[in-house]
Image (cartoon, rainbow over all chains, first blue to last red; front, side, top):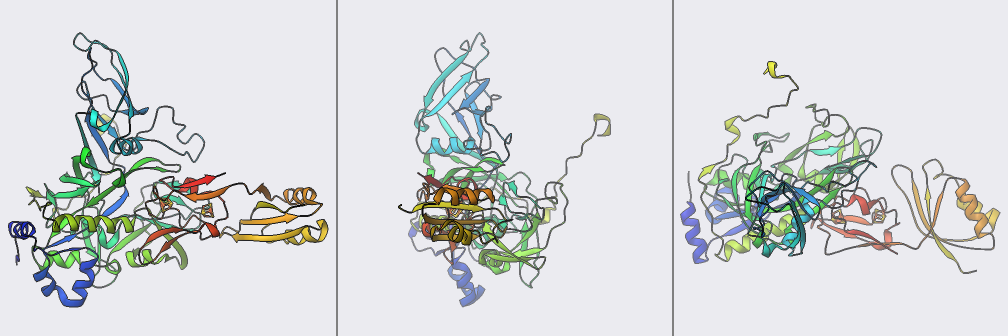
Length: 403
Length: 133
Ligand code: SF4
Ligand code: SF4
């Protein structure tokens, strides 16, 4: 049964009498005063995450030179960007690395500078070397340009991330005998450590697992500025089932495509990262407000770390070979305690996602909402929920006649 | 002679051998252990001050037993502006110098515990851990 509408919440936000709490604060509120009473009081719950998100990038328009050039090969600080759009449009992906990067030729490679670092430098206002090679046409005669640009010099710079805010993630371990260098960090042999990467009870999509409120047009905190959910992320295959303890939830598979104007974002919340032996990426800050439309919505926002679970996965064999077996589920409370038990062994845990920064984001979003300048937007269409039954298709290797 | 600070790195095969005892007994060196650590893979790191006439012979002895000896000229510092408190370094750091403070879940660096193994300088995705010479 609906308790309040978007319009009612926005009216209260404008007047300055709305009640906004973070996804951490709501846990203890519901524990203390119950669902019904909390649902009556709270209008919005804010979430947050600050983690490496590889499927990120910017599209930008760098303006026309005289004479004009049609970008065929484009680099920003020597990092290649896409040359397959119109003459002076390009897309720079977070994981792109310079042509002459040694990659993993001496394993593990360092990947010191890549697309994520360029995005960080751009948003920090630093000059970035732009190199454009054209092949020369009658309308775009110039063949080469090298110049320096800053964020202000560029026409549009839009952060456009096809898959962010993964609802849940594997806890990565290594059952093998030698160290692994992965996007989940350095994994020591024989269960030397376990790395996880979501903000648990603060994580946006863990707090709305049925996608009751998040959809196309949802206004969010993105990279320190305002952004929008524009579609479901790639590989959006959400599912929810009960975890090992009654009332607990194992939700996984939801993702977001997000977009926002880079010019109003901040280098504090978009940070280039280098994963040893894996590659470059971008750490992205995202915060999603969840309107408490009814008690059911509140119930999920109030799930605590002890009630949210993640699967443990071996990155020596199971993950790279795409085997589906996991080593069981562990709760975020266990993960955050610093040690989990796997196969009877105590394994130290560490996170790739910053919980303290996630909390900061949820806090900033709360302040924005309470300040009345950030209003909720009702989605034009909700994202597919677990009921849609979306499942991932594997890639099979076959010839044209086998299709 | 004035004591010299050195970093000793012991491979797993020798970390249980009483090598320091021989430094004292056979080479007559004065030993002052500043920090010592053995990681779960049985690799040891020790920072110590050494003095005595047979300093060079003592070092040669350690090296002959597979110990890596380096003068302590480096120190690890954290660039506090860069660190995002993720935690990617905490299970890698062998000495407990990088650790999570609970329940705030912020990552702290205690330089006093650091054994300058430098594992964090590459394991930190943000490159917030820096070597200072
Ligand atoms: S890995 Fe780097 S950024 Fe993350 S907590 Fe450690 S020092 Fe800070
Ligand atoms: S160098 Fe880094 S990993 Fe090694 S002990 Fe010091 S802080 Fe820990």
